[in-house]
View 1: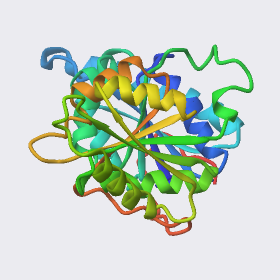
View 2: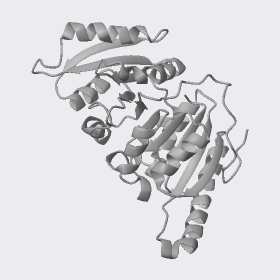
View 3: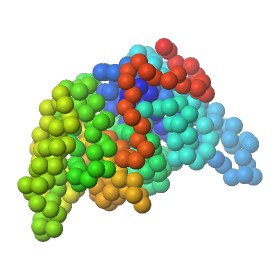
View 4: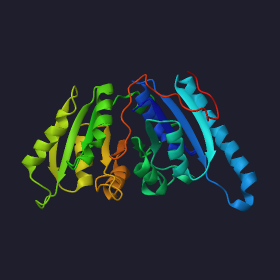
Length: 303
């Protein structure tokens, strides 16, 4: 899952809030990072001049970020494109055969609304690979030394509605847990009215999920109440620093993911979210089997 990480940026420090979390992953995995800057297409009547100016500015910016990461020992490539941001992100993800997309939930212009708008919502609903999303409540440049990018993931909360589709997040969550020696906490939230199911049955089904995470420390929790509050409360109580959720792929998404619940979780959480679309998600690839990406970057990275 971590072989090639696509990182869309828009030139803002808020969008760069994803970078410490990418560096966090790189501490335990020698991934290749692909930086992408997308300039929105201008009106047709002024297209040629504005496209060249926008593309030039995007290239200059993204190459600056590339140079900064290379100084930190990161294997990184970079490119700038013009077009609809969501479509370009998905196109580059396919062309480069990326295994993870990492992005902040808002920034400037194209990525401003993010999970609460069309770009990142579209990426989450259509991405064939897991998406690491984070709400930027601080900027990369102001990050105190020794904080996020140097901290391993210790606990991963996996909210599930116990459906087969919700198991789509299991493989990437287990991979991260093994990589960092983290604990997986499986959570099911019942409706307090009693319409949400039987607690004993929920516990049994959670244990079935946990049994698939071989070699990883696990815990199972059945809670009841309002889903968003239960998810955030359990993340804090169990010391989790990542929430992993899955989409269902039927007429959009599950109520637990990319609907009102996830939008509220991202709005309130100070934790990154790993979101996986259940249908057509790529299998996690083994290290060393990475396909060499097609060279379309604005600059070549170090190997």
